[in-house]
Every structure is written in C-alpha cells, then in structure tokens.
Image (cartoon, rainbow, N blue to C red; front, side, top):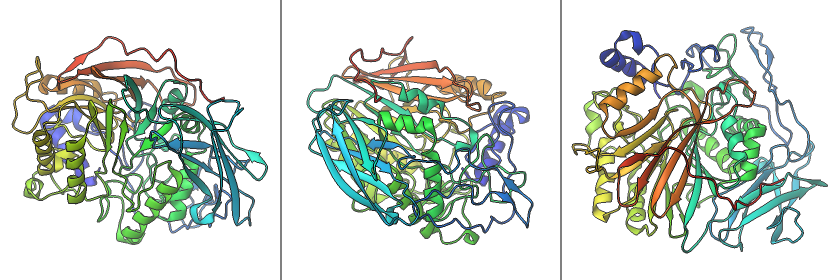
Length: 577
C-alpha cells in the first residue's frame, strides 16, 4: 500500500467519517503503520534517509544469524539479535509439503551442514503409517549451496485422497516426521481447507499457525500471500530502512534486497516453531503477494524500492528464486505461480498472481483518469486468457478463485487503487468471463487487507437484492492476517458498523482481529468460519474464538448467517508425532 494511498485514504476518511476518526484508520502495509493492539506494538517512524549499506554475509550452509547486530559506528543504533540464535541440528528448519495432486505431492526440507561441506546427499521416505513399518515411496537426491541447501521432491506414484507420513535422512540425522495428504479424485463429498495470509513477523506471534497444526481434519492450508515481509527490525532509529512491527526482531535485521537477504528471511521464518508445526502437519498451497518482494510490488517497481537500492529486476529475480527454494510449491517451466488444482468432482481451485504476472503500476490517486483506462491490466493479457480457459473448462461443482487483493467494491466513492478497485476494466472483463461461460458457484478467496469480510460480489452498475442474492455473480471471503496489523481497535468496530449499513452486499466485516478461516465444502454449500484471536503480541498461548460463519448454497450468490461452524471430521487421520 503506497504512501500516496495513505494520504488519499486519510482524505477519504475525513470526508466520510470526520477528522476524529480519520487519522490512521485503514490498515497499512508499510512503515508507520498504526498498531491495532492498544499498548502492544510500538508505533514505528516512517522510513527517512537512505537504507543501510550493510551487506549480507555469504551462506555456505551455516545460518548467518545476528551478523548485522550491535552498535553501528555511524548511527549508534542497536538491532536486537534473533530470538533463535544460530540453532543446532541438520534439519533445524523443519519439513513441509505442498501442492497435492491425486498421485503426487511436493516434499520439502532444508539441511544445514557444517561449514565447508559442498554437497549433501538426502534420502526421503513416505509411509501410510506413523511408525514407517512399510515404505510406500523412497528416494535419494543431493543438494548444494546453489539452492541454499534446500531439498524439494515431487514424490509421485501415490494414492489419491490418502494421508502419508514422510521424513528425511542425511549425514546420520533424521528429520522430524511430516504429514501430508494427496488430493482426492472422483466423487468427493466433503473438503476442508484452511485459509491464511499476511504474517508480519515483527507484529507478533503465529498463534494462527499453531492452531492449524492441531487440526487433524484439514485437507490443505491455502496461503494467499505475504508469507514473509521485507522490512527491517524495529530500532531506536531507522538505521536499516523502513521498519514494520516491534514485537519480534527479524533476521537479517536490515531490509532484504539481495538473494542472500531473502534466503535468510525465509530461514528465519522457518525457525518459528508454530509455523514449522503447521507445515509439518498439512500440505500448503501458496501464492505470493507483494511483501515477498517489496511493498506494493508490480513488474516495473514497488513503493518500497528506489533506484538507490539497486536494480529492481535483479531484486525480483532474487525474491523469486528464494521463494521457489523455500516454499513447497510445484515449480513451472516459465516460472509462473498461477495454476489450477482439482479436488475431484467437488472443487476446482484456481490460483492467480495479481502482483507480478502482468499488473500495470498503481495509479497515484483514485481520481486519475488512467484508473478507468480500458486497457489497464491487473492479471496481464496472458494470465487473463488462461483464466478465461480455466473458468470455461472447470468441471467441478465449486470454482474457488484464490488471489491476493479484494475484488469487491468496498469504498465506492474512494477506491483502493491497489485492489481490483484500481483496475475496474480488468474486473469487468472477469465478470464478462463468468457471463460467457455461464459459470455458477464461484467463490473468491482473498488476503492482503488484514481484516475479515464476506461479500456477495456485484458487478459495477448492477442492482443487488439481499433477500435473494439477485444481481451477484459470486461470493468473496476475505481472510484476516495471521499477525499483520488491522484497523485500530478504537475505531475499527464503528467503521465496520458503518460499512454494514451502507453496503447491502456485505454480509460480515471485522476489521481489528487476526486469525484464519476454515472452509467446509460439500456439494450443497460452501461454509466459511472465521477464527480470531484477541491478542497476537504475546507468546502466551491464546484461545481462538469463532467470530462469524457464513455459507453460500449451490446455485446462489446469497450469503446466509450460520450459528456454529460445521463439526470437524470424526474420522480424521492422526497427526504426525
């Protein structure tokens, strides 16, 4: 979200809500964000001056932790050291799996060998039993510093709709045991997916990831982006560039810009025990958003990037390489992340890239005539054509569209130019795709905005009838952040109430709390349940609460309120030990 957007949003709020509510109301994805946990996060200054010239140390397999901490001769600033330290053990970054197909799944780990080791041979094993009494699949491969000693296996020859346990062995050590599940095929009666997004490490603890690790009956976790953030650790002065959140320190402590920087940031995230546990228990299906690169990224640049920070294209390539190395995503030959995954007769999950595939730069102000330019692209022509084919060919009951930025028109008189609101022609072309293919039962899944919403999606100019859902062409479930800051608690509830009064197609909105969503899908309906936490600024375990449950019936785009979430499966397979 850009500096220009911050200014424009303040003006919008002064106009609509009055000056007393305007200051710092909307959540921001950059330095100077107002914390929503009163008294918890320290407000950070806007980045001023040049970023630090500190270079990341070369990684020869040993984690480079806290190399940039300590007093600086030129500024006297002190960065807090990593809470994890250098760590021990070959498999200190855990295990993960992702992108399940009916006969294959990606398995991932990272080894940290002693300094000077050039190559490590790693063996993997899969079993349908937690004891590994019988081995269903096994293999050996090697990894080197050229891919940061990460290991990624596309394990195939598996059985559809089956839970597997897996582990790695190398240099006399055995990894933690992971648990994964292949996609079902044929007639599927029920599917359960968790939805998450926006995990700013600096803003708090990953209670949402921990809660997901304890849920045995999820088929997969869908991560809608902002898995990492690029900012510096909060300091007593902005020595290392813009900071974002002061609850926990990052490694490296400076803003990440190089391949080594991005690798270190992923390594730091993957030392978090709650995130490790979530990855260990469930396959992830992930897409990136902007902070895997820099705030408000697009192919030609980013809000949080200047020429003094180096070549943007080189930074993008570094970020993409680290993402592919560290995330359990199935890599495609052309490097794209948009793809489709099928879960039998029940769900086609179409995943988009609204950031880096073909987005035109965000306009400077909502009133710019460029906003309504019929040629403006959010997806890019190639991805847009691909999406039209996916929608036309979708054969499953429900079409789920996993993407980054909110599609619904939340602020009609003052559009958010980073979202689909900033690209109305692209949004209209999407609606025309649905009309041409007569697509029904479309559910849009969205992250990015650090808050919770449930919409009936209504095309521009259409009239919506709340009692029947007439006029809507889809529904949209917007996922809260895991930790990234939402609206300030002092004004969030009142603004949410105002939105509910003015937006007839808005069924639910909660603007302050962090958490996750569970989708429960049957042939008859899709149900979304929002599970939220009161606090994420403390390591003390927190109890989640059900904030809302909304359901959409087959053949309808009208959301209805449900009292309690669907019960978990009684026959869920056991968690990994």
